[in-house]
Amino acid sequence: MLCGAKVLIVDDCTLYRDYLAAVVVSHGAVVTGVAWDCSSLLACVDATTPGVILVDMRTRDSEMLLRRALQSSPAAGVVVLGVSGDDESEIVRCAEAGVAGYHLRAEALDDLIVVIRKVAAGEFLCSPVISAILLHRLSSLASQRQKPGRDLVLTAREIQILSMLEVGLSNQEIAARLCIAVHTVKNHVHSLLTKLGVSSRAQAAALARTILPDENPI
Image (cartoon, rainbow, N blue to C red; front, side, top):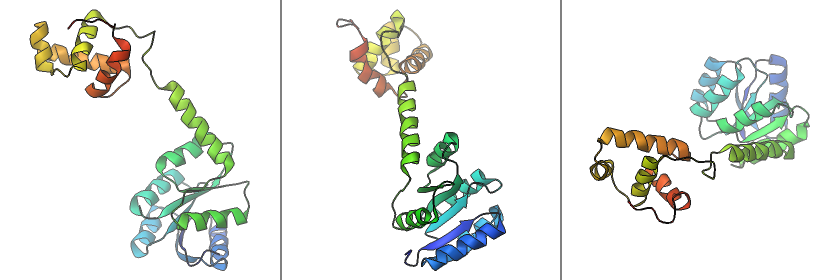
């Protein structure tokens, strides 16, 4: 049973929306409202405090409605419905948006009740199919992440500057040591960060020991 869970349903098919509302109520939930577009969604969120928002991804402008649901009611757990297990890109987009649960087209009604109950309790829940897709996505991102290695080519000047970053010198101090303009140093540092695949000087300095020759005089 759903033990009074407050549920908001977002679906532009009246028949399916009404059926879903009747089903969750029969399992002990309270339907705080139904929505079918942006204005009705925002009106429902303003008037109630749903604990779970069900978004049918077959609804027109579903991705926009999903974002609005997450933004307008951050305390609610959002569950997406009607997603195909073969649509990896949609599953990943929903995960990146911040959904708390999935109910695939091939899954049963009892599975949906379990998802709603878990999400209402503050948990994240998805099927093994979803888990496998998300893990595969994480693995792909990890393999694509740029890592400095044997193929990394730094100029002599970049090696000098990287060694100075390693010991914590500022752009002004590097410019003074190399007798070059500060903006030139900034350009070299930007190039270094890009080549190393990092976003900060501290990260570049941390990688310096694995990249620079054992003896690299500053």
